[in-house]
Length: 484
Image 1 (tube, helix red, strand yellow):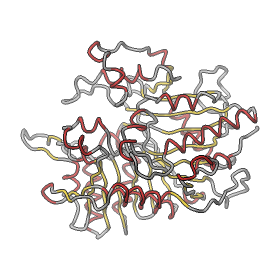
Image 2 (cartoon, rainbow, N blue to C red):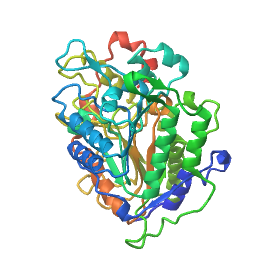
Image 3 (cartoon, rainbow, N blue to C red):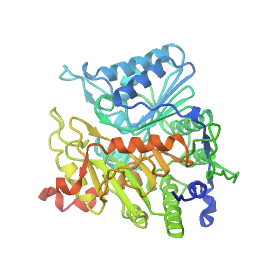
Image 4 (cartoon, rainbow, N blue to C red):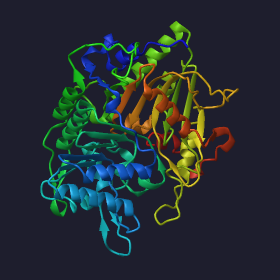
């Protein structure tokens, strides 16, 4: 089967083909051998078990970067309790523990079950399990004026720190999952577990730089100011993520077990309002743009039909993203249906009146070809991009089947926090890892199987229909869409 050049895809991702924006620099690349990629946890429960086991047995460091950590405000949240106890054990054993959370989400008051007046926050719950050497850092992505004026939870609507990277010694787990009960029980997500020392250290350096720019949460809720300015933060990230060496890798020949099974390019993305006039480097969206433009170019030159499959918890693509996808032969979006939507009303206090939010997503995504996950008793939260050749399953005889055949080419995939929508582009701080896969890499089959498993309960968007937007929401829809 004919194939496009993976070497050029990697060069496009790193910026080596972008002669117009040389000032953005060249992104680093980390070749991953087979032994650097562990078998990823298959379920949320396995993710929780793996994470707790690694933390309890940590020898040197535990670094957790997430939107928030569940504060175990109810005794029924056993998995949150177990995670906090694992962090306590690591800290008491003298392990260097660092936690980085979104400032506003981490300080949101959560009622303690069984108490009419007591509350706890994610930051305080973490502080109580750490010894004096453990550190909690909180980062806000909002402009100072919005930090001061917006109350919770409206400040979270305006933008959050959305990166999820979990580092224990020389282990790194990248995911879209936060660290609370539902993400350990019934929320479908993806996990990439790698042990490449240089790549793990790269993510440690990213979290360290972001932590230095956040406030430090101390006893009694006292906050210490940031150690660095915005420009110092971005300069540090540029030094971590870019290189002056324009070395090229040849991905178009894969010979055996000693060759890399993937070439990894880590990225960072901040809201435009966050970077403003500051010196910047190639961000997540520019990397994806480079890959898709190169893919479209090769599709035209080689006459090889290509497809892009995008999984997202909340489908709300920007017009610019849809335009980038339009030259490809086929684009498929897999997202949450009404049954598995993360914002569907739940049978507990504090969740009434949210049914309009999934409806907003239904209308936001009408221009995209959709498959909806309708997995009973689960929430769909998986996110990522698969760039493949256009090849349907052997069982499929129509163009409606979203699955990949066993012999499909998978050229590039992503792992990380982005939902590839309006918020990821304009509101939130994200990080993704782009993997360019050699043709005969064993990771090709693993990512084919992963995509097909995500599609198991998918149905066409047309079969579910679109509900009308509430009258009080309809007039504000263009503005509301910008915040979701």
